[in-house]
Image 1 (cartoon, rainbow, N blue to C red):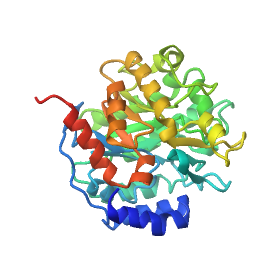
Image 2: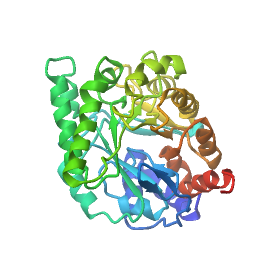
Image 3: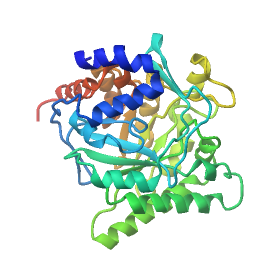
Length: 359
């Protein structure tokens, strides 16, 4: 942890509480208070050059307010969002975010707070992020998801996803569909249910292909973010993950995966704020074993052409190495930066670079 971040964390961020402290941390990034040299470790995939293999996970910069700041701390890529078609205040229940200090975990019940597509797209259009790759994390609006069991839901959700990629395609090198957040009622039910690959994912990818044809270039890849657990809240094995991944494990349906999202099971077990009807999700160190299990299973199930991005429990360079060994080609961090500061990006990128044989 850098001395500046340690002081800011002790004097400002912790006393303000996690929610307001996070907003202050974003302000610090916008002001360039935590610059760091980017570790050069280029990774090529589908014509995209990632300057290094470490990125910032979705949820850290939901509204594209600190994109340039994330580039300044040396991130190879950043996942912005989750972005919704219309503004949304998120979960009204308080608290919405808390540290689990003893275990270096983070609990959240944010519920997709978003400034909405128009404002986020305008910020991305202005953002100066250099070589850092920008990924946009997208989802149907929570008001739409409330009608997931009603006729016409799939058509409405498809239309929203199409609107999102159409507006954001000029600003993003990757898209990630997020149907695995635990904080939007009914969302994981869509992912665990039948037909989502053909009803939501494949049509969104087809829309990206159509946009690419219009502009004479390759389509922007589309990934799917996976939950960390089965519907019964057990960590994945290849057998249990197979039913979820099999419809997606085709390059003509999706281009890869981000694994994993936050855990409901861990939230109910570890957070005093979790409620059965609004459990939230836990990330950080407690999620590490779920992330490793999910990535090992995904390595067996995904198509070789599909990209695998690992996230969950990366609190050190050693954790990044473990996730890479489990099968992740790229690694994302979020909760680790809350405890360790922005310098964790460079630590992890250096560990991944130095672990590979020369040449």
